[in-house]
Image (cartoon, rainbow over all chains, first blue to last red):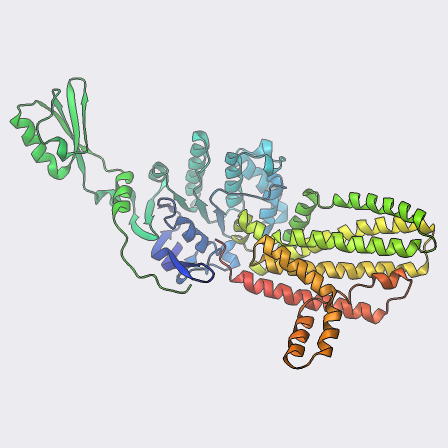
Length: 315
Length: 258
């Protein structure tokens, strides 16, 4: 069974009172996430990540398309009892303490009353908030609120966890802890769907990623598969302090470092660059392929213009 | 009441208490006591009438203000602060959220009225030194005031489900004012003809009939309130509130929470 299945999901917002203007937030989007998978949903701000998550959570209704979670409809309460959600920059009832808030959410999720206190205690330990459990949330820092957010998302032991920018607002230690927590969820065979624009987090954690830009899904797959398709680059290093004529125009970076010079050029320019070095009798030190990172893939996808498509009227 | 509605209602009540809404009641009780002392000194023979009139009117206005100003933020504040996201992503139906909010604020207002009623009776005891059997009418008037709060809470919640807090406050307040003159509007409709009559009659029956729920002057004069009126007003408040809440649910069920 697939944990998440999205087919042709589309969202157009209508704005304006007298003169209706349409804004397409999501172009028909289809993807599937398998059970037990960590899936990273990547994109710059305003790409459509949060809209997708809001549709999946039943907060926003799609203009077209369907989605199912754990093979159930999005408005099915049985499904909602099995998912957890951390919104972007979460804000909680600040008149409550962390413990009271988690009790409240546990009650709404239908956690057995006899087990609730034990679960709240355990999850507070897990996110390292036990010492602040009786403090009202209005006194919490942004990082602490993010931890409370994660705690409420996993409190009821959900099968699928949706995290919208989970690392946002956290210091390096906090980010590491969240990463560990996501890995812990994976070890327990939970499915994690998280959105982020921090690519290093995705690279470290995800089994697969999807890149979304301007509401359009630009690519989905394992990171190795995706980056394999990006044109590679090579780093060429030679002895000397001069660069042959024309070599600088072949690559983006040409720098001197002590007795050596280095340049990074696209693979297709490699032979021409080496010919230029030979012509000037410069001594070659190394030619090393540069590993294509997720960032390269991401940047390449963002540089591709969106498919032109007429914006339909109506919602 | 299902458990989710109960938990949302409890949280709404707790929020109101911790936001110190109920603390204004201490101010109210002090105000009432001070007013009673003053009234006791300046009015002869009509102290009871003045205290009941003054006290119940103050209870009504205080409660209406609280109902409107908390009610208008019940949904919009949750959307603005995004607290709603973590509630509706759980097995909570949107109608359950609206119902929980309604019961939570209504419960707050009942507790509010209870404490304010203590202030009124304390003032009454101070000026007249004893209670008489007609004072039961004060309890009936207080019950009708609670029914007004229930209706205004439903209306504030209704406006809050689609409008901004400022517009919700304006709409709810004007409906309260117009509703307080609902009987006059009905009398006016009866005197007109043709389309005007239909429009005036439609408006008269659409706005909440707060004038029927106001028996303050009657009980201040020691006149009994017919038991039939208690039944009719109870049924009216229930039907009106359920209709308004149903409309709120219909709108909220379709709303995109951007």
